[in-house]
View (cartoon, rainbow, N blue to C red):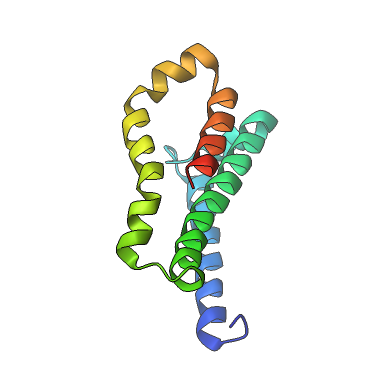
Length: 121
């Protein structure tokens, strides 16, 4: 649980690593992630939203697979076959996403992508 020593230790180590990364990035002449980019509110909001969407999307995939196996009684193979369309569509669309983004805009693609992912489940 959250109060377990190993969980608390992992969280502390993770936060310390994040702090060390931010300090290093702020002081290095050629940072991997220029922190000044986050001064642009559009950039910051887009990145936070993308993180939240990605986190919830992949958490949903995990929980959905657990639901299919534990609540519905499906085998791992049946579950994988049921979820395959989601990943097949991602594989097929990924190479063309740059061109589509230029044509339709990233907001439309992100919205339609998550809607299609939800429908595929």
